[in-house]
Image (cartoon, rainbow, N blue to C red; front, side, top):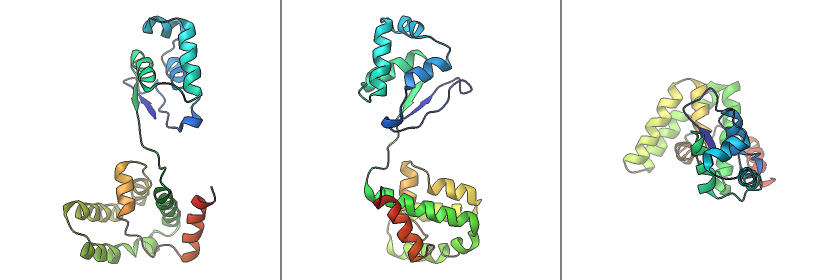
Length: 187
């Protein structure tokens, strides 16, 4: 989840799992300089209600509508982003993290496999959507390594699609692949 709002300088973006939440409401409240009493007044509820809202948020039991309502009165938005929960997505991410580490040390070696892999993939896939992912990989491979790494590790629908259509087969040694996969399996 992420809080955003028009006062970007006073709003710290929070991205976290439910276990890591201290309280988005309390954080947003502090960023606008409000006390519990101020928030209660804007919501038209008692201070004890705000206290219960923050507690239920920390415990992971808050209703999404309640969280949105509290953030709305502070002019903050709630943006939900999917979390990699499926094992194959976590493995794919771990493999691409290993590729990213290798890219930072020897980009030419890693990027050398991309043209041949893209050509091979193009002969096996059909349709404009698959072709668009190949084109996107070509653009990223020709650009700055930092942008390539950012895109391949992005935990968004686009990042997941890129990883599913990855042209990096052969970029990792068998030992590097095994170590990356073990990161996920041993968790």
